[in-house]
Length: 284
Length: 315
Image 1 (cartoon, rainbow over the protein chains, first blue to last red):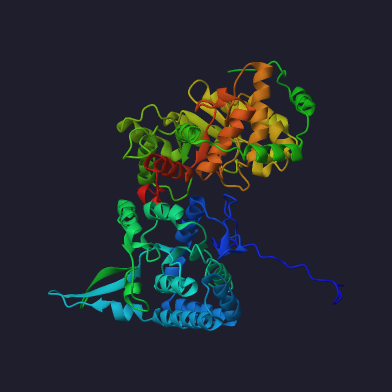
Image 2: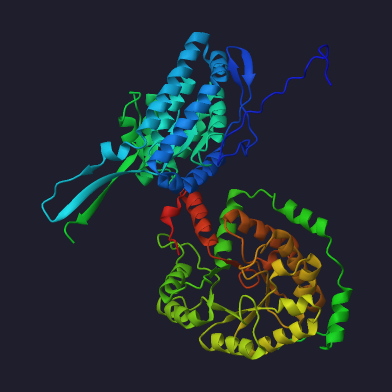
């Protein structure tokens, strides 16, 4: 038993990826250095393209189940994530202060805004169908419905800063409609994303629905863009000059690639929806 | 029919011979199989291995829900696995239940796949629990409908209770029916044989009784074609070749679902039995889902981007 005089040995955290509900290291074994100025902060995993591939396999397998869950259930799970996030505010504030060179007050504001933003998107879960769906008047003895459906697997390149709020702004609108996601976190400030994956792992979100990778965006982005089993991408976190090359690479499977300037708008939800039109005869 | 001078054909000589087989070092076999699975494969070798693996696939459908339509679709896929790429080789064989053999043969002949043989599972597959008369009739039926390969199951109950002579005779009888008309693959169903020692014994028993191939499993019992089991069987065919000068083939089946697993099998073959076995005439892989993964890996190597299952056929 340690007495007050014996100094405690710190238990250092190993920062890992989040794939299929588990926390593996990169299959490549690589890590990279994250610094704040010249101060060493952490050695998170540097995901390889094979980690990306594994994440897509997990996301693809999880997507139908997530889309099939009732909108109400999806909303509840997303709200649960906000609850868990709230309880870990202090940890996120600390990590943001450390990496983004902001005051504690600014960091706290970012975390608070992130949680509110997440709740705002969670509320959309059971409203998407009624707001973006339609019954269409047609010239025939039919009902005609337009039903919004999730696109499938969405690749996200999250913004560098704000590290937590940027992640939430890009992730929440993708998940809420029933897509699954493979997200590459902020390269310079990845710790909030890694802690956020721990929140996801303890919030009833089915394994594989959201997968979070840390590493070099320049290395992963081309593989994500050309991946034939990713249906859409959010490349808001990529510099404007690098975006056209990704759009070209994504053209092989007609990937829908979006980059947003707005935050907290339904546009970010509809960007990852497809419309299914159903004809139904009347009076039969 | 081939006979070997190792035994004189009597049950006692068979038992005496099987007794002389050394036991399998379980820890050693598992460690060696695990070690061989860690080999890294460079791109040029991988491209070669993928095409070789495709040509070794016994494309299989063994479901109660099989229909003539599904079998015909499977045959078409076996001939041209990737309709967009004619450089993909055709598979090793099409493996179906007895009553689908005629349909498969007719369809393959009609679409130009005459060189692809049909393998039929036989002798009351998968349990093997039927009278000898039924098993004989089962085999006759398959061959007369056009099967060129017979995948028979051994009577595991008899084997496990030590009635080796009975198992031996049964294989010999089926071998006799196949004659020159069909290749005989003997399914040991290693998942039910419990120990590696039994796998080794059953391998020798089947080879001595005249098997052209020894096959791990039916695919209906787990575990199926695990790497240590395949290793033990490959050692058996290698040693049998040294004893008799005859090369017997090996067919792992069941549980090999992706390219990585298939390449691990090929490494096992190369390192255990030797490169002479790296041909569809001496090594086959029984699988259904594997082919799609091989095709996706091939597309990835060709196009330089990760492939999607949306671009290969389901059946």
